Image 1: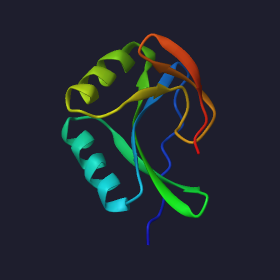
Image 2: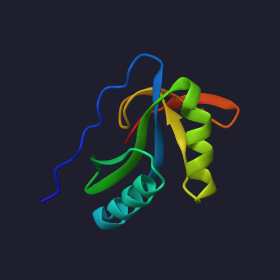
Image 3: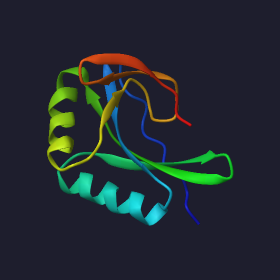
Length: 106
């Protein structure tokens, strides 16, 4: 059975990247392995949404000074990415290109 991984708490001034969400655990694990293959830390969190399980792939934590380069590296490989100020699934400020908004994990 899937045991959700919880990322280590981000240090002050650090962020996680939301990479992508999947309905299937195996696909989330494949994406996690691809991110790790880029030399980037990655993990998967399981979240219940209605009657379905959602598997959220994240990368990090990254110091604020490294967020832009991590986003660029993930984006170059075709991964959707957003910087989230805290671990995925928690309410946090999100940086997505030039706009800021709140991300509420669902």
